[in-house]
Length: 136
Image (cartoon, rainbow, N blue to C red; front, side, top):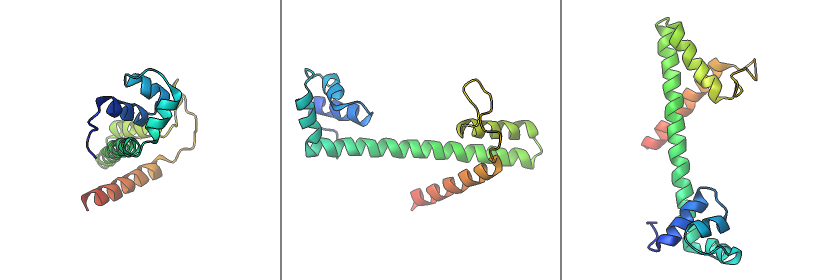
């Protein structure tokens, strides 16, 4: 589906796809705040289809970015380990540990028993599966 011809409808769809409530999106799109009108618009088939399309596109982009990043971290770790570069290997492990939630905001460890080697391996496998699926 292409961009909707009605600019306010398109803006409404974009706002709902971002996670805003229908009534907030309705107002942001330039309409006067009105609960029932917002509910009716979000229930329209064309509008619903456009919102779903925007959400799917955003999800795909996030998945590809995250997969790329995980693959890069796994590759950096493996290359550094193979070259006995402990500084960069440790840096890659720390980046992954932070991503997995092994550190709190104040940088203290929250889960001391995170198996990072397995996580790196799993991330690399998932990245390869996604890359293979994307190429097909």
